[in-house]
Image (cartoon, rainbow, N blue to C red; front, side, top):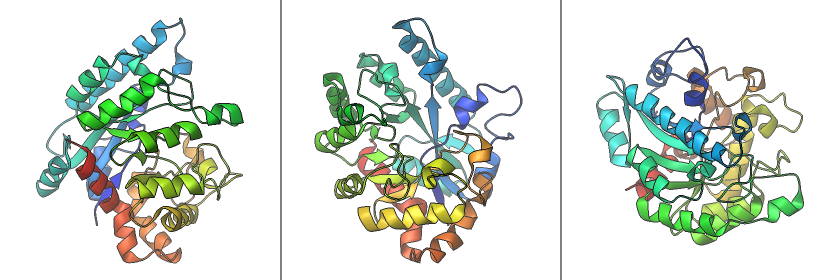
Length: 320
């Protein structure tokens, strides 16, 4: 059994610590453990929190420089057990060589700062997915919010143009963190499948970061996928989730979006370890998901699709 995880924040965390590297560290994800569990591909987010920056409009440009530094870090981590993948074929090739593939993503599309040429530079550096917003309004659109007026807001003109350009280039559009209006704009505007790389079902856990039944259905109809997020407050309203809650969301979203539309998007290293669900202490514990999924009446065929096949299909359909 192989694995594909569509989201982790390990790269940004490694930029903050002095000990450890991508090969081996005390965080939740490293190449050593990814190889041990037979990971086909791990998506690594170049994440920036705009709350860390001050100084007016220039903050977006400084955040962009930080993203570039993370792509440099990832490229320097390539070695005998790890390679960066730019197409689905690269992943198949790496698996044949016993290597783990890394797929670079950007989590905060605002770093484009209205400059479409930055898409070209990011693509050239290996980035193949962009999470259009994080928790702040940017040049592309608005984030999820508990305020209905914000949630109704769609993409900006530049945001719509960015979707079209990403389609042309072969970059995956990620709607996790985006406003409801923005999600629907992406579904309408994109000519290829889109993803919600790390989101859950709002019907099971009423958080604005999660997706409604209507969104799940529309995402599935579009040929896209949603990656189940392991963050406990997104799994269970009052937190305190366990591995069965991951399975509960996976089963529910399979029912609403279709068995071809659910994947894994752990969000590991994107939150405190205290918010991990019981049964998951790091990427090394992914193997426990099979039994949890079976208990949730997810069939073996569906489990394989969730573990890697659905994500691999989208990679094959979108990346160029």
